[in-house]
Image (cartoon, rainbow, N blue to C red; front, side):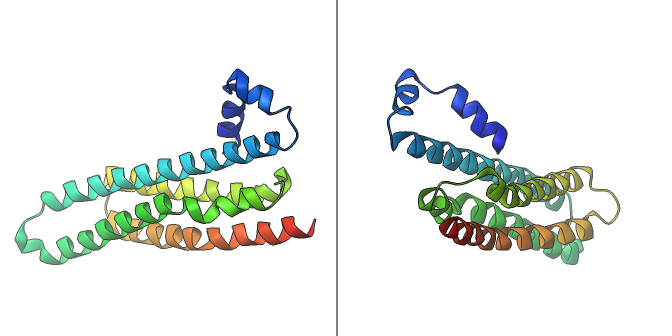
Length: 169
């Protein structure tokens, strides 16, 4: 996410750069950059889950009705991928307060960045497993989905912790 913020800073328009010099406006612009980078990351992760969901759908299409148990299992994975992708996309408005409540310091954001990195790694692993479909891939994807769900569940707690830390500094 830091790279996206830096890229955003570099491509600011002349008006934005001028506005950054006006008291009160620069903090607003910085929060907007973080908010946009956060949203871009979550949409990227959701797109990765959408790709994995398409791979699972392709695997389901290759099965016969006689393989009902495997179809049912893959359908569960398919639904979980869709639900997690939707949660990531919808999470944006819930995190806006992080960037509005206080001046976010880089060291405070390190926890969030670490969590976001783990989310990205889980999504990449899920995508790889669904593409390769090696022996036992369904169990592996189910385990990865559990870890991803826990990380997504933990993200609001990390954000709330940052809000409390920021409010006391």
